[in-house]
Image (cartoon, rainbow, N blue to C red; front, top):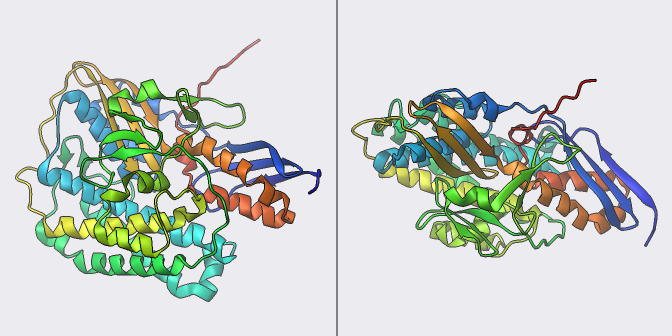
Length: 431
């Protein structure tokens, strides 16, 4: 063992959404400082919402991210509808879940095949990987396209959908339109199962972490659209109680806030959390596929999140097929949403983890206050803790190899940097 001091600097992280850098300082085999610094400018969406009409909240917040706009649409709709005392059920809720399945497919597909698989196969990027594994890259692109097509049909376009509104949709698809997607959805389900079997043979770095997992839990569904907030350490609360149990804090080296659970500290949301807390909610065939791939509960190795995302893609395809096959066209595309003065709360499961929205409205539906807590800011402390736990492995490797492993550890969580920079307290001092 050596007492040598080393610093791993990654000035610009690649194959993540947004702009960030990483610094890891090692003293021997211990990490004395870990900083995931997000330098992408904050965009002040919470302040931007103040004074806007409640119907604008979904469309405005969906612009936070081009990869997971449906997550922002759905969390915003649920929070506003909660304030208005409106519940969307039946075919309209099924359509929302179907739309969300499309986003899970395209987002997880992008990450698994193009952004993260190259790490496990020793390639710097997907283009290099395609030279030897072109059929898998092509398969990943086709899987992602299936998700995009589903989002485009339901939402009006694949990026920043425009057909979603508080209370439902502006226009509901016909049964014939949805049924036209079934052949590709069935192909995608089978292709994802084959991809899971292939990637299960990858070599995964050793790392076991005692995370506190946090996710939604629904009485009967794998969590996507609503539910209670639960954790592996016994938390079980209504979404309305979020602010009493979680806080966000600024740290000096990053534009993004760091979240923690009150009285406990760092926690993890996202695919690993959902899988560990809701394995029994997966379709039986998906459970079997996960077990064949060597996954079991609890899964505490963040590198195996690659496989968990494939499991969730398989669940999304399976559920999307069922929802299309059972679809009955709604009599109206949306329910009425008369304004009133109230505060509403909403949470859904974005591909990267739990996304919480809170809005306060006045009597005519004007937004007075907004709070948005994206999954990446919730996971930042845990990402840095992963790197601290990896310190002995980083210390034992050559500099370039250690740097690659550190970057791979960050990509385990597929951080969405733009989402994380949703807010920053700005203080200007003049002399």
